Length: 609
Image 1 (cartoon, rainbow, N blue to C red):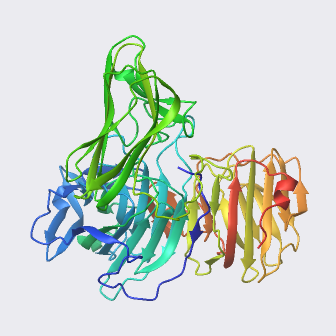
Image 2 (spheres, rainbow, N blue to C red):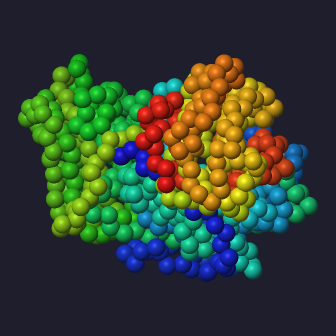
Image 3 (spheres, rainbow, N blue to C red):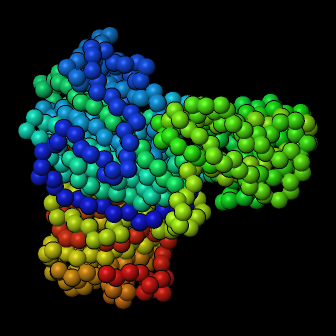
């Protein structure tokens, strides 16, 4: 997967009612899966119930199959306050698809429970119905009851040693409009270029992260017990009218997840490649190994120095478009194996085999199988190896794709990168934050350490006492914020809202024109730059930027919401952690946060308009 590219968030209120159905963003899309929730029972050949408990300091909810029903053409998820085994429970529920879906357009029309606080409705995609398939989470929406705003999110669940998560690429909060009957039409487009979010048929947010490939399940859920619950308003229910999945062709783009074996990194058991279902004798005869790969850093190694061995590695794709595909892999081997092949079946016709070299091939060599016909919208891939002690084979960069169109120019391949520099980047186009409700969360590891840099181009609409961006806790001596004053000052605050040190650049900004603001903290020294020129500096600061508990916010930086995993507690429920501020109003562009100090030369090269 190539490195991350910047993302763009468009945050604007939508003054239109929810249509009953919206055409996909492109006429190339084909409807491959549709659930209308007809009948009187959940179709358990397609869906399973969400049954679990979510409990922490913000959330205490029990998800039950009894809270899910189908009638009147709707999926109904009840929110109830009830006594179970002598204990008061806030109960909710949801359903999870039994099928896994990849690139395509996802759409659902729903009526979230909005009568009282405490219910968290969501339409999202994550994980799978097989092990080793937790790759990312896409939230088409997350809506907290009574709040007319939705979170559109992309989280990455992959990681490395000593770094248990990847910075949230996108966690945006955007105002929404329900129609007169409380319905909301939501969709998201997951593509090789990134993820694009739609509310009531209009694109509202996007994240560019090229070639993040996965096939995962869809969730339709309504959790109860989020923050303070309005018990008197329950029981109530969230309704889902339908779910639709559309697919289209992406010629020249690999649709097979983790064909390069990069997803495990150093976090996941190397004998269990993510997205794949492995079996081997002995167990370590099949493993992901680091270094000297054909592409990027990791590869699959099959073999045993001391034992005869067999290995099998499999995964399936569902709801892909029919047509002619191309299967290939890069291989090198000691040779001599009894069996070495990738079998592809489930195509709608006979199984086919991509033979891997069984004679010594010391250099990486690509082998291919052209003209693979898919006629039943699916395919299953199984790598089989059987060899003697001392024999080995290495496999990398397995690809399954429709061939590029004649004359088409594909973007150059870039290395797989999970954590980049800058560690977080957003708004590659001027992005409005003018309604006081639009904001982005960013992760606790962003702007963390002995040295950090925060940089953005701002066009303030007016002079206000506000904070465009902050990751600052309520108490302690660790954290940071960039603030603006009514008198035109730019302030770089180090510490917490209760205990801090301010570095003030007097009358350093003007309204209604773009200015590049760059703030650098480096082991006790804090500097403020405007348009590449340092306008304030202070040394000997004993406060620091090593708080790891507080999530950051961009845009509306007050008490609008609090990030707590996959739910958002809002307003008075957040306990004032963000501090009280007038929200920034204006445009932001090229927002970049680094976990290091940029040099003056690097700052001079940052984009300014």
